Length: 87
Image 1 (cartoon, rainbow, N blue to C red):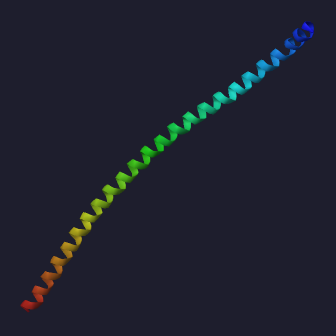
Image 2 (image 1 turned 180 degrees about the vertical axis):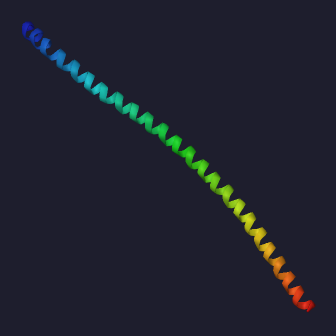
């Protein structure tokens, strides 16, 4: 019986070793993939936040320009009305 166990262990140990390397390698790659995905998502979130802040600053600038334009148009219209009144 001991001889049978020794005989089987000689053939089973290399197979188990290969399975451990294969499973360990796949598990290690999976962990590396998870870490990469977390890093990538954080990077994307930073980029999205930068884009949002850029869009907000552009919107603020455009609103100020629109206010100035309407103010200028109101002045122009007022000047035209005054000229008509003078005539």
